[in-house]
Length: 299
Image (cartoon, rainbow, N blue to C red; front, side, top):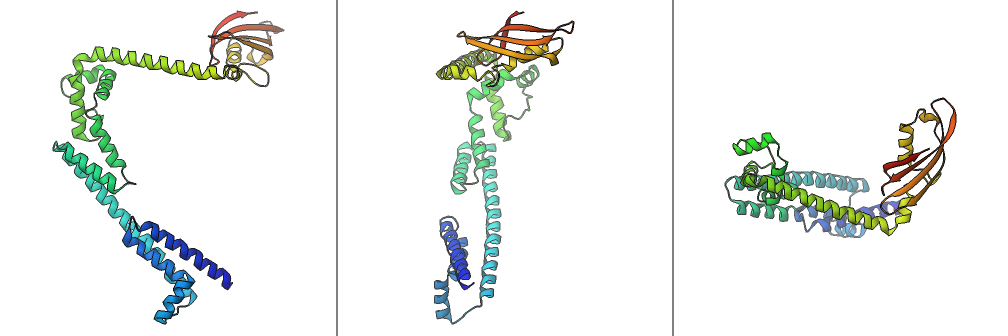
């Protein structure tokens, strides 16, 4: 039992020491308590303490001291965090006020200060910084203008547009003013955006096709069931157009790669309109994603 107690004292003592030492760089004042508690728990350092002070506490009292100390650490940390949160919010609020005053550079300085001081709590500051950037972003303004409804365009023309594109009110007004400067060019902007989207789509499709072709045979095989070779999209199409979908019984499916499409031939049993079971064959073109493009024949 004595050995177990000694092991626990060493373990928790070293743990508190590490916790305190690591925290020295961030919260020096708060780190003193866990360091002292760690030294208090470790048998060797506690013996030095008792030799010098002639004060030898019972094991129970020592653990009470440690528990109270840990509770004190938690309480102090909570107070410190609350204080940090309050300071952080105040600085971000001041930055927002600087924006209202038209002092953007001073606002950015406050944002950079708060980001460097509170590295783990920079979301609000980062968002405000992004809004400052967006309020001057021509591409964002053009995209918003292109997507506007007729009602929004009328409001924009009459300077009555109150929609919130940015949460900071002054920045939102600045952004709306930027959008309005491009109003005469809206038709041209819409065309440019459409051309850009079409080009991006072509590039994405070409890239997807290139990736697909790296393992073309394997990728095509994945479009068909590994159990019976059936393509589920074609099966759904056939059943949808049948008199009695529940009578569908797959027999065999074959497929062949035709470059820009896949030729699929499916043979199955099903009941006809008279209730008799017959064998049917359907030929279809599928795209490279396995979707039915066209039914070529039905027998």
